[in-house]
Image (cartoon, rainbow, N blue to C red):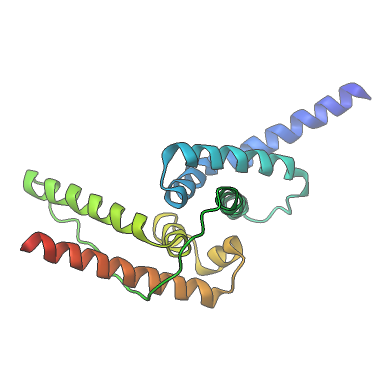
Length: 181
């Protein structure tokens, strides 16, 4: 009986690894943008992975990526509450696509500056907006998947995306205007 239990545990571990490990980059990406810190993101992903494994037997078989990202999100909010940091809520939004341009030295320097400005703009967003934008624009998730992960209605996802994009637009245009002066 003991050998059979070990075999079941090994099969469980193998199944978990095959289903979850391919999504760890997405989990880290989300955690990194939510925490704004590499080390904290590592901690959140590690804790989320432990939680995912703990509840692996209860996994319903739906999209593993969405399931894992929801755990990362919930772990982040637990981590945030433990530090008594309250996320701020604010204004509205929309942003235009950024053109990559042609790859020459001048455009590459400008692209790097643009990336740095965009990174700073994203980090300036309240966590709810940053979360929605990262999941939609960087992870390519649908509104429904984001709604499932965040545990909110699709309309709330759409609102957060619009408001977050507007804040990005305001931030980026004000920074661009400052750079032109």
